[in-house]
Image 1: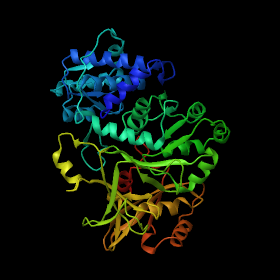
Image 2: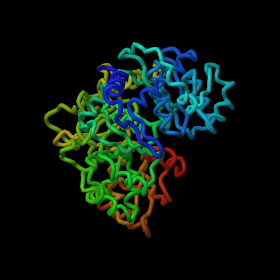
Image 3: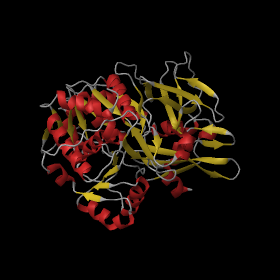
Image 4: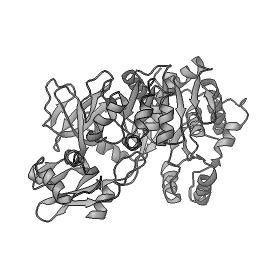
Length: 500
């Protein structure tokens, strides 16, 4: 089974009566999920969809979202999930850039599409998700002979550094990445996953939902994360996947310790999509009575590295490369500093993380120039992240290459400074970035969220005792909260613009 569709059909056929998805009102078996997805596929084919046509998902209802997503893929179409909060200006860009033929939307999302559809020359129909699923189940789609290189779904990058790019994942690279992750995290049919993540992001859609489907597992699907309600549900599951902000929300609740004592079934807690503060990790793991499995992935690659389930668990590390993943660290002039297969590692050597794997996306939609810039002649993808290997070969990230601060020729890594600032008792969290300096090129600035009364002069002295002089921030800004995207990543560009 070399394609995502083959992996799906295997579970649909072999586990017909097993619950695939449980949400607040429904339990959907694998057979029912298959029937509903085929109904959607038939509707699309009969509406004129051809293999490779892009179909946009623009709906807030997560159950219908997943059914339609699978239906699009079974029809031979290419699923394009988008944030249901996108504005009409954003949707106009995505519709025209992708040349999408169909959009699934209802309610206020349908109103947005109807306002702009006259400006979208390729758009053929706006389809109500609920009505499409409820149609006569006797409608059977034409079964598509899926090829390994066929596009499966597209995710658009956030566009924080420019125009969003459509990241095209093929049937083969999705299957390859999921099988590797299934092995690393030991997913089995008896697992029950709690998914409270947004489905328009690769974390909730592929790492969570797709992995659960191809493993024959059951997924409890919640509309969204809610600290207390989510705590109650974790007692019923074996796997919980989250982003750091969710764990921080748990720590703020006095009920956390009491609830965590009931989580005797849960064998795996994962964390990703943004760095987690080292200071809270020890406290968090003591309450969970379990290691937090940090991992490293991105929209272009699925999961690249993960802490091994049996340890060791070096704090701050994102773990070892998964099967089928090769990593090398490069200097700015493309000299190889170190690879994941090197026998001896040096944690003082920092370089850009470059990756080679069958798990990687195939190409950027309609943007061959961007693709040429991100792959080198040996087939390694430039992640834009900076990191180092420790003596055991575990990868630790120190920030984005674009966030690197250069002061009088010295490289300054924001993540190192953030760890020091965050260890100060009166600091809740921080974000470090560079701002222009006339003589030195840049200077270090820090936005800080206070935890109680914060004396900036004392914080500066604290940093000066623990950092090299050029690493110590010369500008501190106390703010109420750090700006973040939907997956918890801090938007440093916004901070830089507001402070510089």
